[in-house]
Amino acid sequence: MAAVSSRLPVFPWDKLEPYKATAAAHPDGLVDLSVGTPVDPVPGLVQEALTGAADSPGYPTVWGTPVLRDAIAGWAARRLGAVSVRHENVLPVVGSKELVAWLPTQLGLGPGDKVAYPRLAYPTYEVGARLCGAEPVVYDDPTELDPAGIRLLWLNSPSNPTGRVLPKEDLVRIVAWAREHGILVFSDECYLELGWEADPVSVLHPDVCGGSYEGLVAVYSLSKRSNLAGYRAAFVLGDSDVLGELLRIRKHGGMMTPAPVQAATAVALGDDAHVDEQRARYAARRTALRTALEAHGFRIEHSEASLYLWATRDEPCWDTVAYLAGLGILVAPGDFYGEAGARFVRVAFTATDERIEAAVKRLG
Image (cartoon, rainbow, N blue to C red; front, top):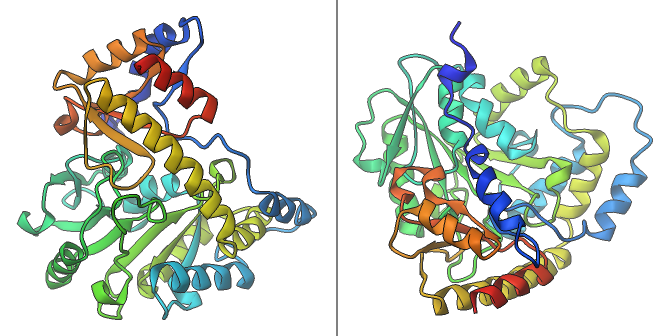
């Protein structure tokens, strides 16, 4: 068996540690805009739901409680326009990263199979392919790929890292192409509720899928929209045959979302007010950072959604990382997300208002 180190790329964040040390030496301290981790409080009603379900001595179910499945279906109808979601179209997962990393393995993929994902992408798509021995394939437009051997196609809209949103007409075209060639589509839509200059559309919207979820699954997380990264609260929606098989596999693997987290997730999905409040916080931080970066000579591309600004000074990304570290600001180099990002950095606006204000002051 091949060693893990030979199967997987180097964990990228380790390379950022020297720059983090430089930034942390700033007299006013570190402004960490490198990782999109929430910093704002978990909504009170969600905390209450979690503690209210704390007395949960029995094992939870992999499929989740009926209350949770109802909440997911209701949210899908309200937020995605996916009005025909039934319980068999729903599956909770233990955080979306776990699902992304282990999905190809759970689907039974291996040597000779291909997993396709965007040229600029979240690194875990590649990791998932390599863990099962499949071949990772990158694309600019998936419909231009040779479909032979492609078993799994990842979409990511809004994109991490670029914030790009795929227009509805592109989604329609891609879904039709994938169905024509019998390719399973998983659409990572974890930032769908965080559109700024575009209105992201799900592959499960009837205008895209034609009212059928055949060959389509969408991935969602509560980490960003509800500040629940620490809860590992996520779920998938779509093709009942695919999710039924995943459910059977995950039962054998004991991949259960803890019962208190299931209760908290159901409450979070039923409340839009806290999402609107968090969006307002992020919108203000985004505007402040974007204005400061552009005034400082940066160019922002895409970034019409998600929690990131895709920024460049038209120089190698590590030069930009070093420059900003000298100002006490830590950002993520674009090549973490593929060679196509080699002249960009990803700037997260998930820091506190105070730290965003400090970054703006230093850029000014």
